[in-house]
Length: 136
Image (tube, rainbow, N blue to C red):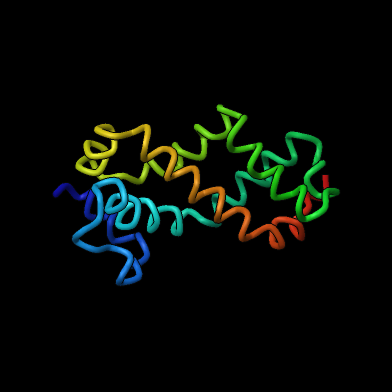
């Protein structure tokens, strides 16, 4: 294992035991052992990127009801390809070379899982996002 790969893996938070089981599909195993720890590690950056996205689009997010904020998050990730790709890049950039090789074998299914987890994480932080309204 290269120094880069071992360094990247050492940065990740531990996975909760029980989320990784031997009878899982390869996609589910990848999700729980690789994607979830990286996304958790990148949480603060994901929030900052989303807040910048909101600022770019005239801060309308901050004037919405909670229900509409959730819809806004969903729409931003589902419909804005450039934004979705930038979020995925924040995660993929922390893969080891071996993990990247596994990822490209089933990138489409893993991308859906990745964006779903990111969307859930942002939605679960909707209150934090609401309180972080930029001043300008």
